[in-house]
Length: 78
Image 1 (cartoon, one colour):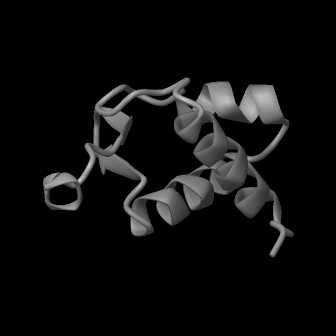
Image 2 (cartoon, rainbow, N blue to C red; image 1 turned 45 degrees about the vertical axis):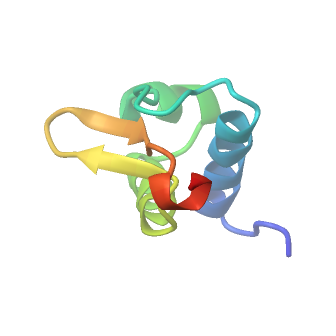
Image 3 (cartoon, rainbow, N blue to C red; image 1 turned 45 degrees about the horizontal axis):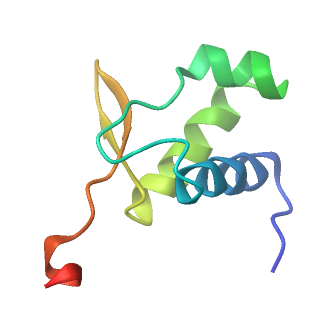
């Protein structure tokens, strides 16, 4: 299934960058403003993309601090 909405496309791009190792666990992701500028999308689109990635466990959002790559589940590696 291919991403069809702007936020799904942005989430897919960020997911690919995380999987490629561009962003490591616990590393901060770009700010909403930076992603808006880089991808030509609205703030709401960035927030929805981040929420989608948070819901699937790919990132963690810390209010006031930003979005970070989630740490790998230690149970999955044991």
